[in-house]
Amino acid sequence: MKEIQQIPVAQASRTNPFARVFDELTAFCRSRSMFMLHYCTGCGAIELPPAMTSRFDMERLGIQPMVSPRQADILLITGYVSVKTLKRVILTYEQMASPKYVIGICSCTVNGGMYWQSYATAKKLNDYMPVDMYIAGCMPRPEAVIEGLRGLMERVRTGEANGWEDYYRRYDYYLGHQQRLFGEAWQTPTNVIQEAEHYGLAGPETEGEHTALLRQHQQPLEPLEMRIGLKERV
Amino acid sequence: MSGGEGSKALGPILRDVKGAHITSTRPRRSRVDLPADALPALLELLKGRAGFVHLSAISCVDWMDDGQFELVYHVWSYEMSMMVSAHIRIPREPGVYLSVYDLYHPAAFFERDIHEMYGLYFEGSPDMEKFILTEWDGPPPMRKDFDSEAWVNDHFDWQDYRPEWLQELEEDGGGIAIRPDEQRFSRRK
Image 1 (cartoon, helix red, strand yellow):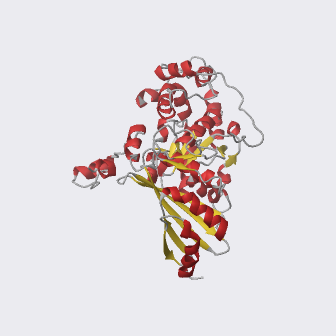
Image 2 (image 1 turned 90 degrees about the vertical axis):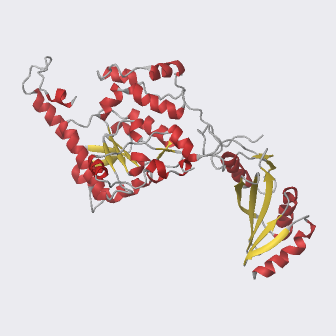
Image 3 (image 1 turned 135 degrees about the vertical axis):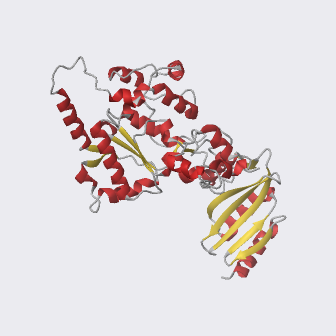
C-alpha cells in the first residue's frame, strides 16, 4: 500500500506547476500553528501546565491551548477515558473542524494502563477514533509531551498525519466500535457521512451495516430540556 | 474523653435497644452490632439523646458467601467528639432495607450510591435513580459476584503489542515470563 502511495502521480485537475509549493507552504504553516483543545480527560493533563508555562514553554513551538473545539486542531486525550467520558470525547472530536489530530497521552489510552481491569475504562482509544500519535508513559514528562507534539508537527508538515481522513473513510468501522460500547441507539449530532461527502472522502468503507443501524435509530435532534431549580420531590 | 468513657456514656442510652452490642474499638470510636430491625431505634436514640447529629457515611460490604449485605452507619457527635459505627446485616436476597432519610437527610445520597453500586433498595428513600453510572446497563458493579475482568474482556479489545525487538528476544528464549493474559486473575482458575 505504501509503495503505491509513493508512486508520483500527476494530478489531472492541477495544471499550475507551483500548486504543490503552496500545498507545502500550507502544510508547513499548519504544522507551526497548532491549537490544542482545552479538554483534559484524565490525570495526564497535569503534565500540560508545566509544558505550557515558562520552563518548557510550548508556545514557542506555536502550540497553544484553545477553549472551543471549533477553533482547535489537536485533541489531547490525556489519560484514561471512561465510557462516559468517551462519549463526550467523540462528540467533541466530531465538532472539530478538519484537519484535526488526536494525540493519546499516557498508557491508559494505549491499553487501559493501570485501569486494565476496570469495567468503566475504555482500553483501546484507536478503536473509537483515529489516533495520530501516542505518547506512552504514566505519566509522560513535559519533555516527552513536547517531543510527541514535535513528532506530530513533523507528520503534519509531511502530510502523514491523516487520521481525520481515516475517520471519514472508515466511519463504519469506528461507528461499529462505538455502537458496541454505547448501544445500538448511539448517535451524535454530527452527520459524519455528509461531512465525508463534503470533503470528498466518502469511500466504500464509509457506510456499512453500522451506519445502516444508525440511520434506523437516528432521531432528529432536539434542544436539551432546561430546568430551573430542583426536581420536585414526590 | 477516653474510649472507655465513651462506651460507658453510650451504655445507658442504648439500654433500650434490643440486641445491641457495643465494643470500643479505639478512643472516641465505638462499634455497635445490632439486628437490622433495631437500627432506626438506635439512630433515633443516638441523635435525640446523645447529639449524634452528623451522618458521615453509610458504607456497604458484600458478604457473598454468607448471603448477606453489611450496612455500616457512621454517625458523629460534635458534643462528645465521638464516632459510632452501627453495623447491621441484611439478607442479600431480596436486598431491601429501610431508608433513614427521615432521620438524616444526607442518607439520601449514600443510599442512592449504594443502590447504584450494590443493587440494594432502600424503601422510603427520596431518589433511587442512577447517579454516577447513568449510562450503565450491566449488573451493580460493586457486588462480589460481578466479574470485572470478564466484563472487560467481553466489552473491550486489547491492543496487540508484539514489536520486533520483543520477538527477537523471545526467539532467544527470553521475553515476558508470564504473559498478561495468563496473569489476569479471572483466568487463573
